[in-house]
Image (tube, rainbow, N blue to C red; front, side, top):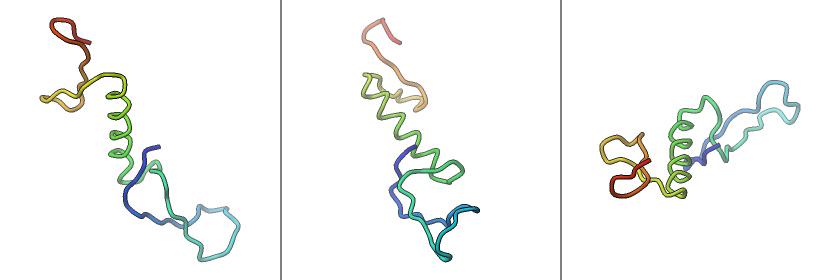
Length: 72
């Protein structure tokens, strides 16, 4: 899961038996969270760049690796 930059708190899920009124602070993005898709994309982008790919200037969803006439 991707890292989140904001402080987000949630109530524990149903079935969690502990003190009532307890809240949890999220350290990572969860499925369904508004920020999850951006956090995942940032993590994926870092991974692709570590492998030597670079983002296309025309389409940020396209990654390119290579030089000259040889591109992946």
